[in-house]
Image (cartoon, rainbow, N blue to C red; front, side):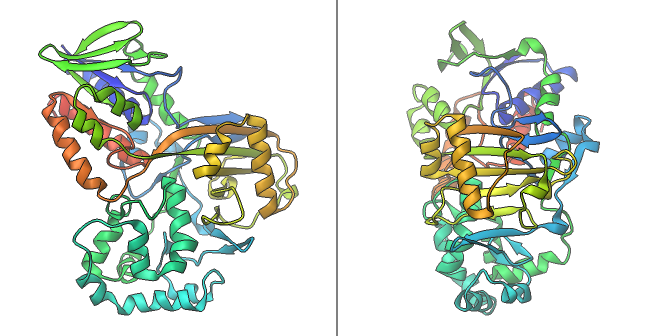
Length: 460
């Protein structure tokens, strides 16, 4: 019987333990132990259900075109819960000069598919609109001059569309997903499909127009009862005696005897370790095992603060149609973004209700980390009121602080990860899982974790 330790019970560690348990039920001679420092599993994936409201405390969906989260949900018997975003009403706004300006229809991140809709937009100046049109005619030049090495997101977007597009859409979009500085983020790590489009077509607009003709799926997918249901179903499929809550791992070591994992309760031996702890925690644990690997894991991480407000009467709090708005860096607002949840997804509110989620990142999130829930909620209400008008009293409020939850994929991230994976392979029986390495979305984390578990038991 092989024993494997999974350190960290966020979505990656939980998916790894789930897959090991599934394989064990199928006859694999494997036993898992899942160590989680806190008293709950799921990490930042958590759903609060109260008074008819379904409020996500972390991610509210996954990207539809990545299949691995949906495959897991269906495997767990949640196929009838899978729900697409209301893309017929998808519209996103950007806060410009204290007013919400709609992004043109047919945008894929900062790239337009419909140039007529772009021309009709109030968001961009005539100069920026011309830069978009010019990008189509520069296809050969852009393809020929595509860099052979990594560059920042800012450099990539600026080469194609200029500073205005970067500032109004590029920076707030990427900050919303990665919480990072576009001047430091690696374009090859965080926008790989767009890098491939440049290498193939030169023009990103031309490449997306070609793909748009066959693309019909909604952008986002979630679960009707909330993302927390995915966590609950995985937990139910893992043997109870495999799970150790409030069990902070104090050290790991590797030698002829295999892997040793130490907690306050003692030391246990394992044949392998799946390191799914946050990247800074994983780095500290692995530094005595492989100093170079720890150096490669040294990366910045940003925090986020999420505040959800449930209102019983939507007529008393009007919001524009669409999914929400973004706030560019340097705007006179502490907010990073806001989602109009009940317009993005069905079945999120009681009849006639309204649900919004406010997001803070960067320095604003760092400041709010030191505030209590009431103060944080008051700041969120004030910032929302400055943009959307006076808010009525909410029926319920949820505040979550996601400290250092977003690792920053800096320029040359993929090169560092290639070396890191080589070192991990050299340490027989070590897998690195989580959002610090090969993607931050739920589908990526689930894919990586389940693949690692299958590799451990000798399946591909």
